[in-house]
Length: 181
Image 1 (tube, one colour):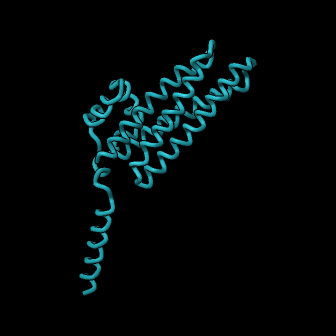
Image 2 (cartoon, one colour; image 1 turned 120 degrees about the vertical axis):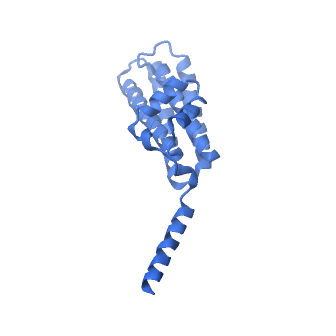
Image 3 (cartoon, rainbow, N blue to C red; image 1 turned 90 degrees about the horizontal axis):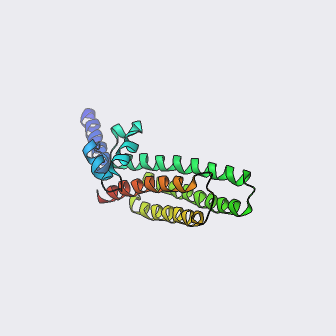
């Protein structure tokens, strides 16, 4: 009788666990699926190459791909933020220093938004991710707008903004895919 009870409990626990685990995140994404998602960005080849550059991509499901794309975006945002801050500290041109400070503030908010995306991703609140992506997108637009008037761009922030915007588009596409599952 004890064996029956133990088996019954194990089966019950297995059923409960399977019902809790979202079915959309259980299947490893194929290269074809990743390419299809990348086709929704403005550069399929660069998107695919960037995602595949992370070794975690080899064994991810839809949720894992969002996490990889957010990590890539976070790394880019942190590097750009650090670069901008270094120029804030070394630039003697007060107008340019102000532009760097404004963009630094934007990137600070972007980093906060990306942390929010990770929190929503880990809590399963996938529908809230889009708001954070939109907020980060607005921040990058503000930095681009401020830098549009800069006559000098020794830090190549315009290029870095464009690169980050592209990675953010990957976050948007991968998270949108997760919401559809």
